[in-house]
Image: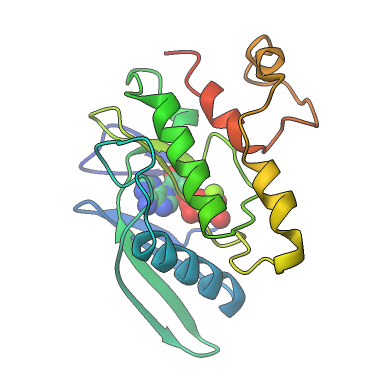
Length: 189
Ligand SMILES: Nc1ncnc2c1ncn2[C@@H]1O[C@H](COP(=O)(O)OP(=O)(O)O)[C@@H](O)[C@H]1O
Ligand SMILES: [Mg+2]
């Protein structure tokens, strides 16, 4: 845990490779592949953004700068998106369903496979705007023949009511880490 001077919250950084200062996140990567995944995804998300539900913010981190010394250092500076849902017990999300829909639409539109939806990767800022972060394991270029599978993956699930009944800690395999689980990460506020 690192304590942030400007923020009353704690950020968990198990790998000690993140610093957050003046609303800028500096993230270092242990390997080039993760750096390139994150960089490619964040660039495409910004370039191709479609605001399908008319939300009032850009729901992903924005790149400020990036640098690499191959084999030694891979680093991205990006905008700060608030605290993870996991640590949030005060801020109510605004326009959550539309934001989740917009995030899913953009991941689908870019043909990304994002597999790590969990409460440490969904952030909320002080105004209640919700963001998806952490693209190092997001696969940016899915093979065209998998497009239909990707499309279905991001659809609003027909049986979503079942998930709503589960406690946040539920380990239900089918739902765990799935896109629409984002809708239920703020149940406790
Ligand atoms: N852009 C960001 N805005 C706010 N917090 C961030 C941002 N990027 C990282 N963090 C914080 O750092 C933690 C770890 O970063 P993350 O990108 O999820 O990497 P990993 O989970 O692979 O270590 C996140 O859970 C979050 O608390
Ligand atoms: Mg993460």
